Length: 314
Ligand code: 8YV
Image 1 (tube, rainbow, N blue to C red):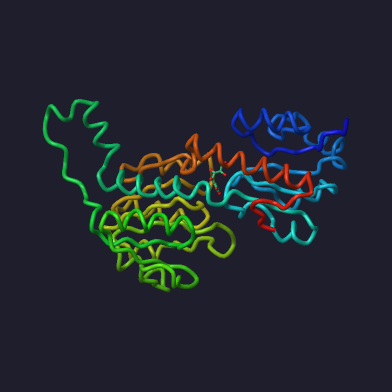
Image 2: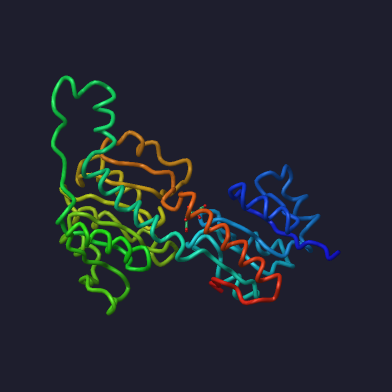
């Protein structure tokens, strides 16, 4: 019987994926290893694949410790935490999970916008804590028909735009270039987009080119009636500037799924009554996570069978 390929997992997947991976491969679980040096010493020449997650990635240092590494398969579309140039330079293939999570992430962007504008969390507490019996819920903000700026018109950005167009919103967007295939207005200056729109939704890819791109001047331009939503990566935002704007009510509110220091986020965020927080869970539905896991497993299987990868990045 041929020996099973060895795979290093950086973080766990749901049970249905773990069962399948454990059956097909010798799986080394980084998060369970008591002694990492011993794990690398014992298996450095036999680990041929890494299975990681979007937010966990794979650094060059990690890949360098595995000279037999052939492929990094990422459970997530964002590959900003994977050192792609190191992988490319060393013939290490990389796959991700595009497409299958687009709808859920776009749904979450709209859900967060509605939650912040309509104060869904506060209203829920108002009912549970007896406020309703004493008086009326304060008035909130309409979403339908407003102007929305989307920062990053990729797959997710386009799916958010489509949803908000159905809310009769007027959509404009910022990106490195305009898209001729879409009917929305392209605004090449991010602060200008923020100035012209009431809601700003970030759907950019993470990484060096977008780091801190949403900065203090963008929040100033968004202004006190503005609502900010981020379902991309925490790194795209100057989080200190966001905190200052929310604390000073220089913007109306924010819906945030992604942060700088996940999962140990800045405590100041937890004290804000004008922010709705999510635990990086925009793709976290059973349906999407099943599809993501299958894509990771199918990419690994294709690699070891010598077949074409389904969703190669590098
Ligand atoms: C996941 C993500 O939450 O797709 C991405 O880039 O960050 C998310 O879909 C993550 O990869 C799951 O751990």
